[in-house]
Image (cartoon, rainbow, N blue to C red; front, side, top):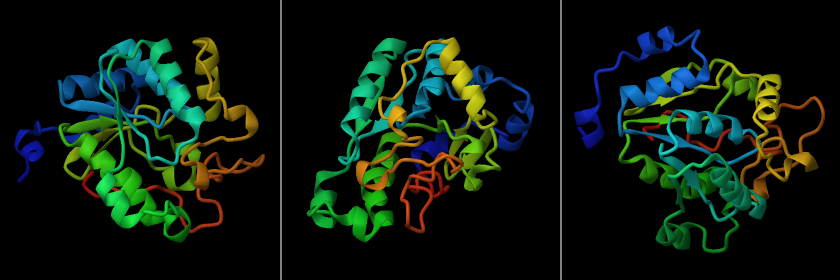
Length: 236
């Protein structure tokens, strides 16, 4: 049994999910922070829709840890947006994590793993760094939404993810809800969104989305891959 399992509060996850079915996102965020005081972090890609969840977190507790993964393949615009958004929202605890340089030297010395084996690339550049980033926490908050892709239509508000509890406050939000919220709160937009990028990950594996496509259709286009691996319930 690891340290998190020894200290994990006895939370009835299905019951908590059921209780929060009609709750607004801010209440779900507050429930996460109340259930795991000092043991919960948010994870954000600082992508095209990230401003909504981050703004909500700033309304509940600006000091909430926000974990960001710099894979080494990100668009420069994303790194700039991270800094701009964190400053504009007054988030005081944004933490950036990078891949282990020894692991990169051994497994992706030529920086071409993304084209040869994208799952292995995501593992070394995203999954492993996030596991390290989340090590001190018993729960985490993320911004996945049911409307984003066919693989996400059944996302609950609260779920067990390996040894941690995962909160999805925006699961029921649609695209119109996001746009209305951004406009109502005058949130800055990711600079690449205006160029047709609806979902933004690493530069080599992100393309523009065509009208009518799922928002995540531009991720790993042409490959049998729809997720990076951090939401597969593999103990992260």
